[in-house]
Image 1: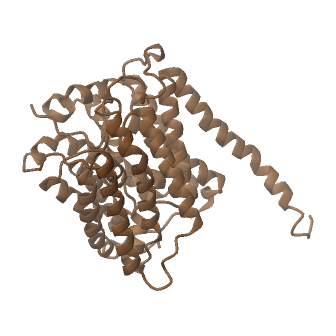
Image 2: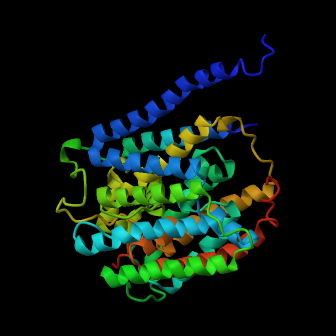
Length: 57
Length: 377
């Protein structure tokens, strides 16, 4: 058995993930997208990062 | 049939170009589709992720492997390249974040008991599967079955670790300590130089040279990481995105995310509602997998045989995947989010993470033979 099997599996996994995500998520609106660059945009950075602190209730 | 061994070469070379063109076209179409559906920023972030995936796979730049090389063979080349890349990023990122703190954030997190334990445990697990956060993505993308099996469990573990994060951080932690401004940059560069000097002292004779490909890779990784910061407003990370993937799945099967302080928090709940194609770490993760896939296909990686490992090795990979995900959330990141991005944006937790994960790696390397994972090497 070669990596052809696992490459097919990873392609299927990622394809399935994206299809699933699009089916359960809010419809994206490209006309309300943020500016191309965060730097210079005047907008605050998001919190979706690995170093994000644990929120307290 | 020609007996001339050179006769077939031009045909073979020409014969692979359509396949390679399709690969490149597919990657570019994916970036264009993301831009069209969600906005140009997100397409650009995906391209940055693709660039990282191509660089890591094509130039064999990684984290777990070089750490193993240092511990087992006293070969510091890979770690020296990592330190060089981190230094390059720090030179730009620390002043940039200091001057633009409203728009750009660093990978700043507190040092704490759970963070220390998480980093140590992560170090063990990453040597068991021979892949850290980025390494698992790249390995999976290139068709490595160990990386591919570890990946979904990494995501589940990351989701669970985030779910319990407030409890773990409640065990005790320091305030966030950040090395800022010129003083912070000088301290960071001095720290990197000190570690590099120590590695060179400890290196085996004849092992003090860094191959050219690693210098090139370090420069490319640094440039792409800075691009990620400027475009997305946050440093390169991996584990948040993986946890988010599992959070969406968990919600779909009825798990109450409101029971978790982390997932119920406004910013994270919004990420769960929106598509992954608007989440920075998800996009770079997808790009890493895609970039590695392209390189592996380009090189005809499909033909590589799969390793024959005993059952206990596959069980160990599943457990290690879960541990990688869970521990990296407690540690506020993996090699990328905590070590690479933490140190390069001045966070003290990045340095503590490095020491603890390196100690864990020493243990993990010694576990591999007992788990049957050296059988395929």
